[in-house]
Figure 1 (spheres, rainbow, N blue to C red):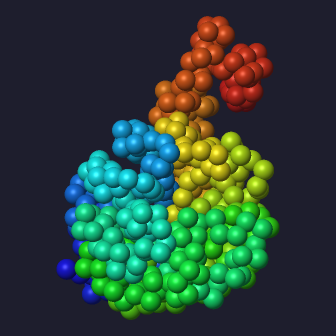
Figure 2 (tube, one colour):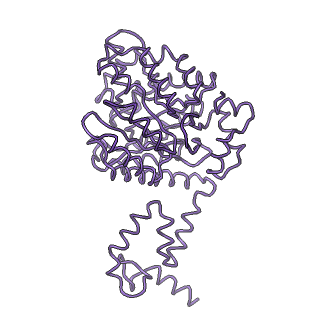
Figure 3 (cartoon, helix red, strand yellow):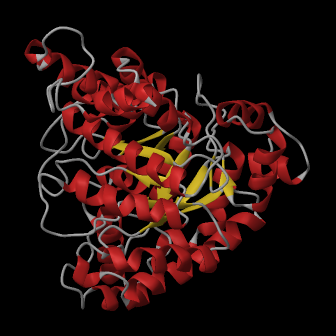
Length: 428
């Protein structure tokens, strides 16, 4: 079986490419061309039944990923299915299962059966669980067996932390927060304990064989992403990025689709530089960023703080935005947190698409302006990224509106600027 990348290079437009092109309202050849260049990915494991193909790349609408998953202390499959549904209802384009703890295969299989969008995982979580939470029992064979098992089940893309090499660990230990990636921390501890190189890196060719066989898209994990502003754009982060650039080239040579994960906490004035550096080092591979979070002092509101950075990242070149919820840094997110995170990031992605002049991106905004001018509330709710919340806020205050709904309770009828402006137009 050929991967989508191999098909694209042969000049073949696959059914998945056609489906993605219809969703994007672009010619199928555009999808094929971007995949062939390695500047887009189409995560689609053939074993994932009922999947709606989605293409991720700079030539297309900016996509949003939602992270869900159980923790060892909270939640269960019964708690994660409603989060999946909330993420999908809010408009998530991809979902990642970050579950840790027991029963991971059963949780993943149920999520795959229920998820019509690309589903991603972080294989080292399951491998570490199988090793009893002990790095001494973690082996390269175990890591590869988990990758193969998840590929067999239908996982569409996997985060693999292959760029964090043994020589980079001392750089990370000089930081204020050290290593904040769960996968990165596990691997760093393993390398120090065993005095050996990262097993993902050592056995990369074998990983490529599995991913090519199942057309699993590799999402190169940034195990040394900064966890606070003080650690952003440091030697550790960029040394790992250089390794990721090498791995991108190796993926492309093997016909494996690949994207690159980007930093978490970055001052706003460094976002453009970070995105452009990734584009240069990684040959314009699709950039998948977490935020970035532009300030460290917004716990409880990190979906807002990070969405600001996400808009900038998408404007400058990121293709996939990994949401941050209000619970970030505090707790496992609830269903309500998942919805809030997806909506915030859809706003960020759309604002960036409008700003970069993506064809058709502003169509809904212009329609919204017309609906507001005519006080067509139903039309406004249908156009809104979160029409349910918009309707709820309007209806909650509707009792304060007297007579015809040609204004809202913010200004009232006599002080409504839109009504006054329309009146001026009629007198011209």
